[in-house]
Length: 198
Image (cartoon, helix red, strand yellow):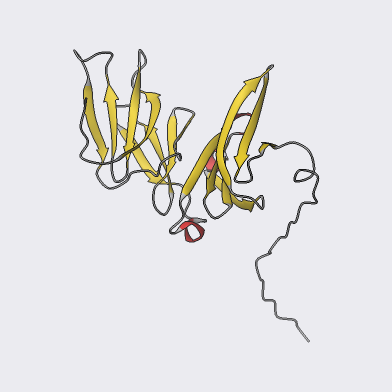
């Protein structure tokens, strides 16, 4: 048993070294990493005293976990020094939408390099990793609250499924409708003021 003095929320496998993995332990208001293979060589280190994660929000994206704290998404990237992680907010563009949000589930869409997080008010946010350009974020709603989500490879194809508050299971990212219903969509363009020469 190892104590954190905080409420544990997520456990995520991370890269500890070239030879072995480590375990990231995210709590309500702190983040820790457990290194080693047994009680003989365990090292339990706190990497953040201020940033934690909400339950069900952490996903290991390419060796660098992503999680939602209270107002933003944070990515924990391993650094060259063993035992060190750098962490920073990666969602500033959508942070105002997420204040006070409560996470219900999250999932990776591995075949599209996406992270998806579902909230109690029915909103979900999809983050797409764009390489050197960073992360691009898109808020959406299915019209139902998602309670759980899972992604898995089935017969060589990666697929995502979600469980709705209505008791049904849906597959996401397939077809051109919402379970047979039309997709309601809109786009809001940025305003541009132009002066006409008369």
